Length: 358
Image (tube, rainbow, N blue to C red):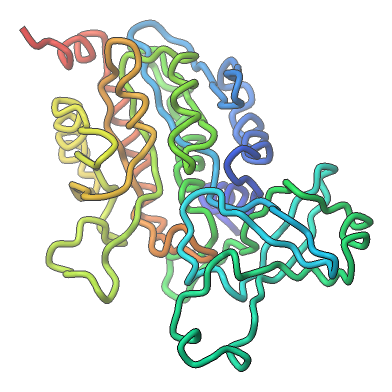
């Protein structure tokens, strides 16, 4: 029988939710937290569940969206062309299955195709096929047939991948661990925090459109008005061939990743130290990360108002921004545990201490 964590991860990863079309994910968020707090949204669709409590406003946040596509055009023979939504490497797209969701909610399966290599000049076979030279085959034979099936320009498109266990116990493959692993952890940690006696007011937040420039976080933070924020993410692993494993900072089975720096945000030093201290005190497996690339919703949240101390907790995920990413569920559980333990420590005194500079 599946555990609670496995059930949440399956529901969230299999949901269809490219940036701007996060409705299925938001529905899971609200259903799984029903009765835990008071729900609201901002005007872009980011969700908030206020658990209540007295003390500093502490935000526990994850983004709902996944990288995906939209239908850019439909040709006379019924083939669809796409534009990317979020960061895609063309290498990982060709010959994969996708799901197009119509404006009526119908889901249409398609396969990404291109001109076969047998018909390409030798020089072209060595080049990366661009998204513009790919198409989606849904089995239709005309533009009218696509319309009869419900498809049209602008439809959102997401990878088609099931959540499944791998042979090694505790490891799973799915699409969208970036960031449905954060969403599952948000729900699991949130339900635990709702039952605990706390000295703060916890706000569980699910943002939209992170993958296209942290847009949802920018409006969400104005709605939530937090004093401190903890961001939950599915972060890229660096423990596979091609990396210097001696300097890896995102290894599967090594625990929750505490991110201290990336180009979008320098995490609040005192809050990062508190996260590390909490992990050590609670004996929660963890690893530290200083990232040269990438970014998270912390990039917008930390700049809100007069500033919001932020730290990012991550679950290392192999092959993110593709149809198949891999995590170790032990790292996920470590993130849930650290999220709960850290937020319990964010009392009024501790929150004030974070921003004492004089």
